[in-house]
Image 1 (cartoon, rainbow, N blue to C red):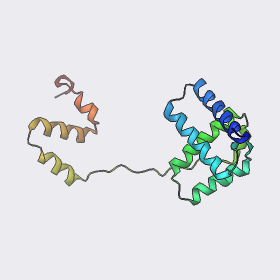
Image 2 (cartoon, helix red, strand yellow):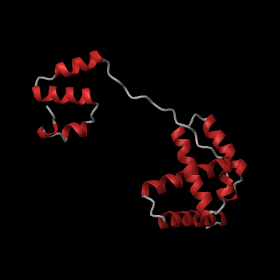
Image 3 (cartoon, rainbow, N blue to C red):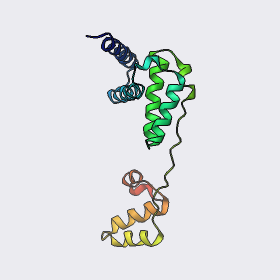
Image 4 (cartoon, helix red, strand yellow):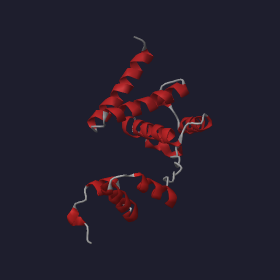
Length: 153
């Protein structure tokens, strides 16, 4: 076993121990390890020797490659844990900035589309439920939980 392999194993084990102490879920742990591994691949050396400029260049690299905002932010969170908790070097994360994710508007049906949807139902029960949900802006869980006594006629 070489010196480099040993150092990587110890570093990864320390990070795994830190995550286990904080009871992070296995999926979170996997994401954090992946973020550090990809950063290490970008650097071409051990990530514990990285500088704040290396981190800044890595973020620029991800942006240039067309990485989504969600993926960039996930990488930042994993690296933040690594540098702040495992290495106790929080100052390195100062140049890393979260990327705002574009807000997607929900699909809103037109009045004609809603009318066609309600008209397509054959059961009076379902017509009433759809009309009530649309008219009152209820969620599915709200409609399914309704009782006859809930309606003030």
